[in-house]
Image 1 (tube, rainbow, N blue to C red):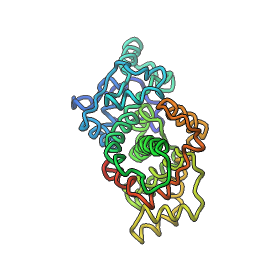
Image 2 (cartoon, rainbow, N blue to C red):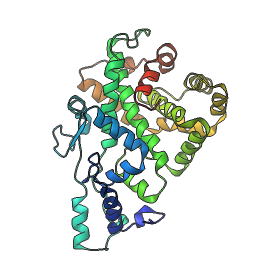
Image 3 (spheres, rainbow, N blue to C red):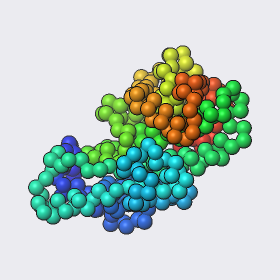
Image 4 (cartoon, helix red, strand yellow):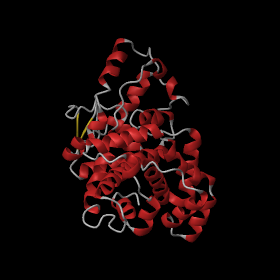
Length: 317
């Protein structure tokens, strides 16, 4: 089915058909009552990768709001991780009812946005937590002079950054208006055309593995409330992340790679401070953020392999 260049011009009837076409496979891995879920599973490799890994580690989905997710999602993460269970809402039935009452009447532009389902983000958290439980055992960050509380905070930030990076990376595959619409209904992180153009250039220049590493480390910096690295510090980071001499040189000179690295810092600083501060306090850590996050990410990358090992485990490194 051909879709308009602007997804807002898409008729509700066409949207539901696009959603339903993907359901014909009846794959038990997809959520039939989550708008665009089956489409994204079949069309977006990052979405599929995370879903497959989540189910492999025993993850499940539910429409039961067992953790107050619909009211206050920031307090729901511990229960989601403990049970490996991600809540979502049925956001299909109401649209089907509207279409049945007023056939072919509404376009997407005329509809108030239905409730989004952030299963990609929450599933990524569960996948990250599964691997970090092993990686953070024993000598985790033992080469660094930081407190036990800071180590715990950094582990949580590693997981949050992975969820951010997975969503950011998945934007690369949103090449049609329908794909963009479904993705925006299922992701916190969406790109402008300029950012997505830079992402495509990165993929062509340094490949998917290095591109994901650059995005991930960008979010590590941002979520640790660190400033954007200087040009010299940025070069040193790329030297760690990209061992190949030729690729490294290309990456250092590339405006697109720099743009993608900078994108992680576009997360609102106030938002990052509030969410990180709340979650740490909720988990029983009362140390002020300015002391808790005295973590040198570059030093972590130089002196330990925890980030590289983590990305390798998640099949993104």
